[in-house]
Image 1: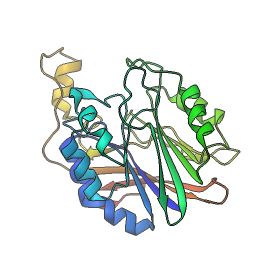
Image 2: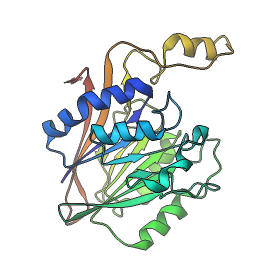
Image 3: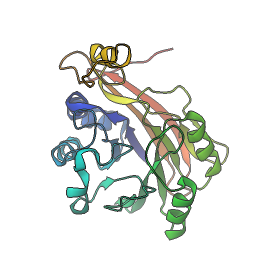
Length: 265
């Protein structure tokens, strides 16, 4: 079974990239299920209901979140009424909505779990290991994919090896740069440190470069912003998973610019 996982959608340009390309990519690779990380869709921080609907209408079967899961108080107002929005399962003081959802596609159960990392992160969370262990104890799905949203590359890898063989895939999000380490671990769990992002190509992790320079280099008073033009980037990963074993048989990074696949190397 082929499943697509799209990296962090950054602002309106990220939504535009998903809206223009997701269905084309899904058809190109014969995927039957699509996961999209949407935690940066609302101007770069958070996810409004309107953003969620745009991603769903574009073809996202499941939308995951991250450290900006409730910026501006958007999500708590509507997450209980959705059926495909997954917030981090290990949030300490936020219990609105599910941290893991089981979907059924053609008789196959697909569980998607969202986990928030601990290293170099400001959010107060419970142990990722304990939270995921509790979810695994609830019952086994045919396929189980974890969106591990974290800053530390070694934390993501440690988590993946810890649960190797018990999960179909651990896909990293948050740092917005597609890593060159997609692989299948010894016991059959696919791993990638970071799947990347969807949004403006000419940017600093999705944000307009000048605004980032002013904020970081010159301590400017204004925040970062999303540029309004330029090439659109799509970063994703294609997983081919055997539903009978739950193991991933192949993992392939996807890198598209303006609706066309690019191959490097």
